[in-house]
Length: 306
Image (cartoon, rainbow, N blue to C red; front, top):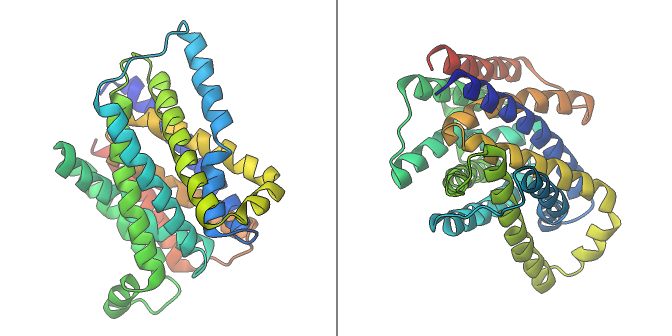
């Protein structure tokens, strides 16, 4: 891949990871004021204005013609959208069990699961360097996941069977499926500009997600509508950073394999550590720091062997 494109997708991915960390932090705050379903909904419902804004900006920039799409666009975007809803719900549930950093860490097997889905569903293979980078970064994640217990083989095994681990792993699985689906959907938009592909994919997906979640809330948790309305200010922030992060992911997916984008996205853990220390006032121990170093090493390995 051309070097300028490599630099572009890396910059976009790091920016998306930064915004995603803010989104997760504010959603954790909102989870204390509403149900998990309500906190999940605000990511999508309050993100629509910003998604449409991005789409409008690039539509105007490129001449005002809505791009055509290939048949696979609608199916892949729908699959990815539903997977992302459930993944977000599961990730928010992990916050009920452990601290913010570790709750996020359990879902970080996502790059490996993304690579597996890409191989099985679309036959996309990852280079040896990419596989090594994924392995190193996930080793860091698993170290973080047991950092607050005695680190033994037994601990590693039993921690994976715990409720937060299962929720996090399930979240990572569905985020992996969503990543592959969004990459395929974005690549199905017939346009030369990656940002336009990302904006169009985001607009369709987020509107579909909002309709699905709103229908669920009206049918099952109607009382949450009042709670969501009361928290409109932080919810609007979640909508902005969530839509911006997704816009970044979808654009990066048009420039690089989804699994490799997700390896670089592990840089979010660095932002998560900062949030844990300065926002949630949580203590970070030595194994968690080592795990963070391994995640960073995995990202560096990706570029050294790429």
